[in-house]
Image (tube, rainbow, N blue to C red; front, side, top):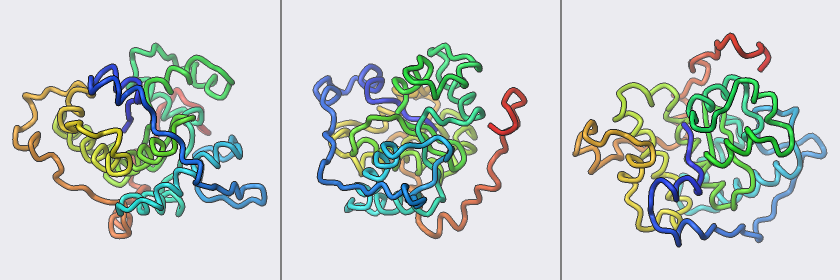
Length: 260
C-alpha cells in the first residue's frame, strides 16, 4: 500500500544508525534516453499533463536498473511498467482520491483536503510532509514515488509497489487484520530486498514489518511469523492475465472533483 521513507524507517525500526545514515549512491553508468521530446515514452504516468524530462529520466534510470537485475523480479517489474500495466508518477501527482487515502494513512502529518490543490506548487509543505513520511504509494494500478531517491532505492520501491499491485493489496490488505496486512507487506518487502539487498542486510523482515506498521504481534499466528512468505506472486504474464484492474474498487468520494 504505502512504504515508509528510509528516514522514518530509521526512527521506527531501530536497525542501526550506520545503515540508515548511508544512502545507496546513484549509478552514474546507467544512461537514460529521455525519448519524450518526439512524443515517445517508456512508461505511463498517472497524470500525463504534469511531467518533465527530469522525472522521466529519473524513472527510466530505475527501469534500466531493474532490467539489469539478476533476480527475475527486476525485469518483471520493469516490464509491468513499460507495458503500461502499472502507471507510475510522483507523489505530487496523486489523484484527489489517492491523496485522500494518503491523508487518512498519515494522520500525524495534519493534512487537510484542501492541501490536495497545493501539491504541484514548488516547495509546498503538504508534499514535503508526504515525501518525508513515505517513499511510495499504490492504489489499483497507480504507483507514486518520492523524488530524489538513489537509483537502487527507487528501483526497490517500484518493485515493492508493483508487488502490491499484482497482489491487489488495496483489497486483500484489510481482509483479516493484522494478519492480512502483515502478509501483504512482508511479500512487498521481500521483493524489495531482492533488488536492494544492502539496505536490508541483517534485518529480520518479519520483525521489521510488525514493528514498522505497529501490528499486534499476538494476533498473528506464530507459524506465519516464522514462515511469512505464503505466496510471492510475481508480476509475470500468468499473474497479469488473472489481474483485472477493471474490477478494482471505484473512486466514489463525493468530496473530490469528478475529473480528479
